[in-house]
Length: 142
Image (cartoon, rainbow, N blue to C red):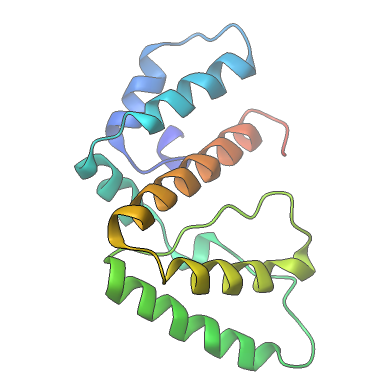
């Protein structure tokens, strides 16, 4: 189940090795620490397990949505070409109708990053995604 939160085997092993946790906050703190400690190869492994389908945009409807989705597909392709991994962004806390704009804005901004800067941003977004998934897995969402 932990691999459904973060695709790094080492991350999952590390989080599992310290069970049981006294409370959810301790679990989340350990999960964050394990994310921060990922090596470059482990981060690559985790990013490779992410997919565009893990970031649904169900609230994106209405005039201009088709054009926005076309722009989003093109931006994702450009991002993957430039950085060699899928674009990851944590959308916890946004309303459905805000998701498409947040992703488009985020990807356009981050396409301007240098590779090292973007790798750090992607790692933090992955950590935030992992934290949200783990929170939902343990019974209460963000």
